[in-house]
Length: 449
Ligand code: FA5
Ligand code: MG
Image: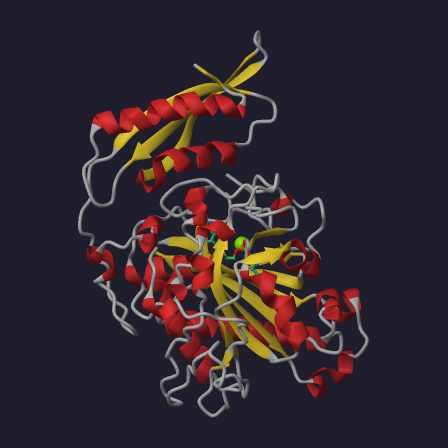
């Protein structure tokens, strides 16, 4: 199990099954995305620029999606460089910029719209600015330093993160945009959605590309007077900090009820370098607890670094696939990226409908065993397999591991489940892929048994 990029806890409380396409609405050229205001009452300051379209319609229906994602993001050559630190494989570069989150008829876009709708109709007197078109390439400063993620944090390692150069990478979370939006001073509250990338294991609930939606809200200075200048424990013990945490929790509980109806929820303490206190929220789904988001009170140093040290507030980041898999009963995370009409044709703007599986072609299982070197990185193996076979790998699991004392070596055996979502695979074609993997895997320093 890989360690989550930011917290050393299991990322999937639920083992859970879940896909990609060019969309007409996601192909406008955007010089500099600025976001738009969600409330109909608010003036869309950027409506005169081609970078945004107004998302407002009426106060009762603020669900229209902004359509500002740039077509330049869908150019794979942006992500493949000859820089020695570049570890973005072509199959990942091909995923970037498809803009699933801005497609009104796609489950990811539908969930995003429902979340925006909730925030637009919240009775908190706050206007949430909408951002959806930030560049998926961010700097290490944006993704890590601005968020107090230390230089030696495992989340920064190239085994977990896709680097374009040594200082630029595919964002691993939408929190990478928190500081720039805070610094711009454009809004005291915002929602920011986008595709994020992590090198990870492979199964029905883990895909190296997924979507997050980030929310941030700063509180009025007057409400925080009593805690002025407080830092560290003095701040977190203050009634003002507790009030922010309480508002955060009730806001997110309300969001879950808006999405799922009344649901069972549970809060746990969590840790993020950029929030304190920090929490995660799980919801009960089919008898099991599923982690849907991380959140907390924004760390004062993050606000300081964003030139907003005079303010206090909360932030959260949730996984859109997780929510969509539950809402639409989508069993495999790969489906979100498919262009198959049998999938995409099932969803309509604003409608939550159960997904009707259209086929389950038979799986083909293949095992591979090898002696590993000392510096073996499992994610490199997973990615190599994906590079060879692509999305027809449904799952890779380690089924056996032992150490030979005499040899002083450890052997690992993996079972690979090959299954296409749209046709039957032949044994011959799978054998050919597996043979290629057996040869290439030696480049990782392993010895195939
Ligand atoms: C984060 O990414 C933090 N940036 C969240 C945050 C934002 C905390 C703001 C505090 C303030 P985490 O790695 O736990 O945290 O991911 C957040 C959510 O993204 C998870 O709860 C889950 O819903 C989703 N998620 C994480 N990893 C995956 C994955 N591999 N596939 C699908 N969804 C995932
Ligand atoms: Mg988490």
